[in-house]
Length: 346
Ligand SMILES: [Fe+2]
Ligand SMILES: [Fe+2]
Image (cartoon, helix red, strand yellow):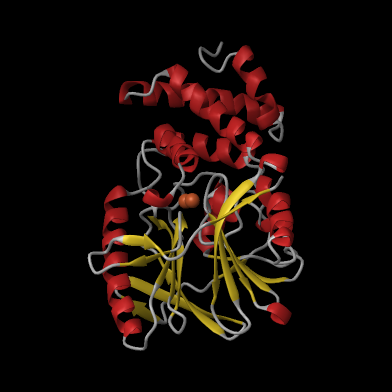
């Protein structure tokens, strides 16, 4: 079969981005890409547009690493010895760091593999001394922008067993029921390869037996770090199966992962990049109906938890998968909780 779209000429343009793939994997990739275009064509994405999306991922990641790497971040002094940083990376999800001084660091979602060195350097430059004293790594889900650099750390990252199964299967709709099998697989291969995903063979899997409930969300674990205690909740699987949400009740921190994305606070470049996955697959949520239920329940819980915290003079910080750390108003509207600080590598 001679490819109609993924021609030699096109493949030459994206070859550097796909270099980790073997010859056989590249052959399958081209076949699946042709299929993907056949599916997306009648849904309103032409072959040319689809190719531009694929190449666009590689171009964007390349253009935003090294000396062109930038981030916008927020910094919160949580206690006398813990400072929390949430970094919006050039593309993809936020890198969340708890810096507990002598007690080291906890990393919650790592960003893409291709940004690891840039992030390490950024931590040094903003006064957090790099990743070297990281003690705990948690990955909320199997998308490359959340776990793709976890293999660079010496300790095993904690994740849901289904998250690990998705990583092993190589397609983000594993464990879900939808009819997007091929589109999800092709997107997963594209993003994992182009973002240089690095996930270790062995990971720490969290428990799956609920030890309590928060609304519709089962609590699977309680994790301690530097005096904080995080409840680990299991999402309902609207965005992807095996996604974890974290809540720290004393400090009032809610990590929603990609169940909540604060689109209004994304820069135009980040928002445009974010939309590529939607255009390639149709939706980044493996089940849009469940995703809606999840967002509704998270909003309800956030308003409730915030009201509870306010009784003690505290407030809830909503840390979304992407976008600014925010506060929630009574109508469920997210408002950035602090100014964003800009970082540029050079
Ligand atoms: Fe994400
Ligand atoms: Fe995601």
